[in-house]
Length: 569
Ligand SMILES: Cc1cc2nc3c(=O)[nH]c(=O)nc-3n(C[C@H](O)[C@H](O)[C@H](O)COP(=O)(O)OP(=O)(O)OC[C@H]3O[C@@H](n4cnc5c(N)ncnc54)[C@H](O)[C@@H]3O)c2cc1C
Ligand SMILES: *[C@@H]1O[C@H](CO)[C@@H](O)[C@H](O)[C@H]1NC(C)=O
Ligand SMILES: *[C@@H]1O[C@H](CO)[C@@H](O)[C@H](O)[C@H]1NC(C)=O
Ligand SMILES: *[C@@H]1O[C@H](CO)[C@@H](O)[C@H](O)[C@H]1NC(C)=O
Ligand SMILES: *[C@@H]1O[C@H](CO)[C@@H](O)[C@H](O)[C@H]1NC(C)=O
Ligand SMILES: *[C@@H]1O[C@H](CO)[C@@H](O)[C@H](O)[C@H]1NC(C)=O
Image 1 (cartoon, protein in one colour):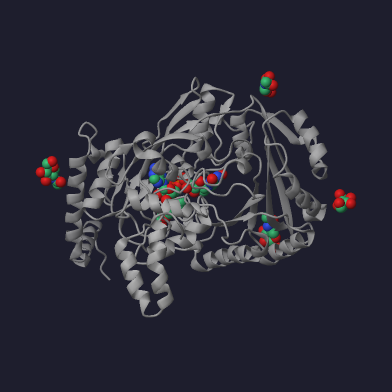
Image 2 (cartoon, helix red, strand yellow):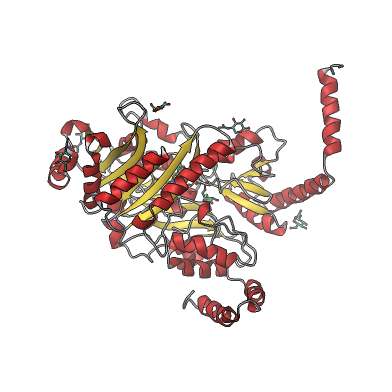
């Protein structure tokens, strides 16, 4: 066989590529170029948008795309790529994206920190472009008013670092993973280890800026209380593009105390877990004790066991913590030597599994994730303590499945005081703790993926008798497409209601009304966005079903009229 010279090879390959281009390619290219024209036309000329536009033939395109992929499941060669990435450098770039996308009928995905568990910010079933918010990440902390104005592209680590730079006695209640983005995290309520003292993140948000479907920049006053309510907990990307949130800072002691205690079941952890469920949701609001259960190798060769990890933040000193624990949770046997007193900022390193003494605080400014893996998450809420027999069954099931991890985050405290209608996030009073199910794996391939995902689904199924029902509640920030996907067709409302009620309970009704009002064309949509009630959808739905089901035929129009009036669903 003749070997082609590199030059000839390139030439040959170009011809092959050119010949194999489908005839729609030039149409796509021209659509792309009119879109780009529109963007240029609609953005502020003193901030040229061209610098923010990346097409797939730009050398930075792949690295930009991969920079915020946080789940390797969404990094396969068959995962659809955006046809353009816009890395907004100015608010007008966001406005232009929203306006021009509608004008050219293009689907837009908004990306904050990229931590969506299902990759919803950068994976789509239809062609799409990516509006990447990472450049819009300024953080202004004002200690006098105890507030911070944070742009949506900032990460939690950056927010915490900038707060602590100004004050050692202020903090903000949000997640403990520093690379998570403000845009997705806070719009989905955001919880962290100060939740029992201060509620979720959105309980401490006092203002916001958003670009609405018409491309207008609105603040709380100009958007009105309904839309403001919706964007504080309904999950990202159903109502507009969040530009910033104004946070009310909270007070933290100059030194806090953390500890981590690990026990295997061979070492009598059953008793501790049983007691944890009575203590953790009821103890002082200053104390948050997360419990992690996972399957590990036992000391006997080849036998698996369960390990329980108790990891805690106490907003106080270690002496008070020990006396509190001796009184309320003696089964854990916490000792002074297991406690670390440290600043609130450093406590975040501890919670993120980093060595406090050896790690510089600047690591919180690092936007890249430490390591990437394949993952799947699910969630549940527990309302009644589980009996000892119940726990024994759970251990058996976990060992039988050989993997799977459960994180238990206790509620109670401030969480039980805030009404469930205060924000779209409804999971308040009556919950003892939230479960996060985790499957993590490191090998590629469909079989491996199926194995791990099926395992976590089976564990979730096994837990059914122990968790909330009607609806089985779930946390929107733990995005789980198993709960249902919206195809945005005629059945959109009904598809949306399935996951919507799991995530938002009765607040779903109000969200649908607000959505229908502020985005009637359903431009801001994704796999699990809030659906609209559409007139056409209603009429078609009724005709579709009428022949089959005369009872539904009678009830549907009434239901929907009443639903629009907020009477019922
Ligand atoms: C390692 C890790 C730890 C986590 N820990 C916690 C935790 O402690 N507490 C907790 O509550 N959650 C936690 N989460 C979940 C996390 O809060 C959510 O996945 C959140 O949505 C991530 O936000 P993001 O901006 O990083 O993600 P993205 O993937 O960028 O966005 C998530 C969703 O929000 C939308 N969105 C993003 N930015 C905007 C914007 N500016 N305007 C409108 N929509 C937007 C996206 O389109 C997408 O639908 C964790 C996730 C990971 C991966
Ligand atoms: C740009 O704007 C001008 C006037 O505002 C308009 O005439 C022109 O058609 C626009 N071009 C595009 C590509 O939208
Ligand atoms: C994602 O996939 C691309 C292309 O297959 C690969 O080059 C890249 O290393 C992958 N990213 C990670 C973090 O594995
Ligand atoms: C906090 O801890 C530091 C270092 O251990 C110590 O110097 C400081 O006095 C402590 N502050 C308070 C208020 O206890
Ligand atoms: C294990 O728990 C039981 C029940 O509370 C208790 O009586 C026993 O002393 C514990 N054993 C050990 C080794 O701690
Ligand atoms: C657990 O045991 C299995 C073999 O039974 C082994 O392959 C695996 O590496 C062990 N895991 C750890 C973390 O030691």
